[in-house]
Image (cartoon, rainbow, N blue to C red; front, side, top):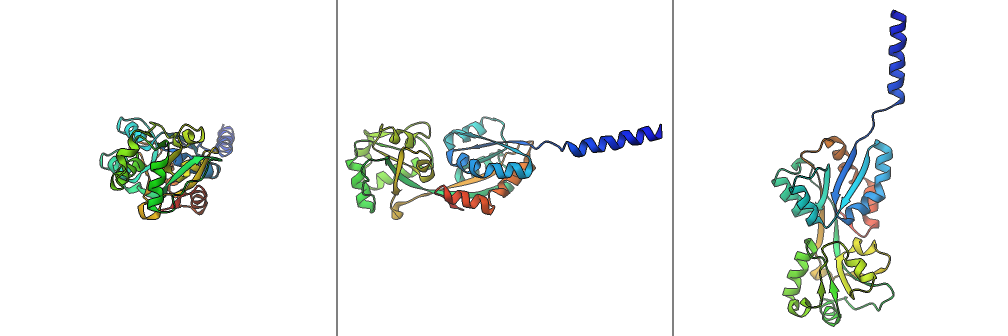
Length: 250
């Protein structure tokens, strides 16, 4: 009987060794830039840790509302002031807050279309006034900035009737399809759409960099795995991917 028990115990240890504990499935809330980075570095993280990454995306403001409504997730990568508001509300863990990357606002045209002059503030202003139609997001960090910028430049009223503001991150797609002449959105978003051509960043004197911040959900059941992924976002491989997608590692 003792021998039988010993053999059964040994076999049990062999089974455990042969069948390691399954990794966690991490749900990540973010915008398109989040998915671009996770698509680039996620497979390496998954192979190394055994965890699985699932990215759910929308405009960052919409993802913030989903978090506020109580939807379950494990970590978020949102605009810095959105993340800070969620930390204050107790939805994200303050000690996990990490600025990951930042992106400037760019101008897009349909690929093959004439490239407009946006090299100076005055040229950028005249290009906007001359365009038949323009587009930027209905809501978001870039929207807040561009609305204020156009007021400061004194062209907000002239642009109003020819501006299309979609609810979703479809600015670059609208430009690529020929639905609008000029699009303005963060540069990686433009680079992600083959039919859209990046004209360039808006002039540096009036540029605004959108900072994306990661943090773990306060009610996540996979907090350690989520912390590990945020740490991985600061790795050399992640930084290289961030830069390759037209952003700066913050």
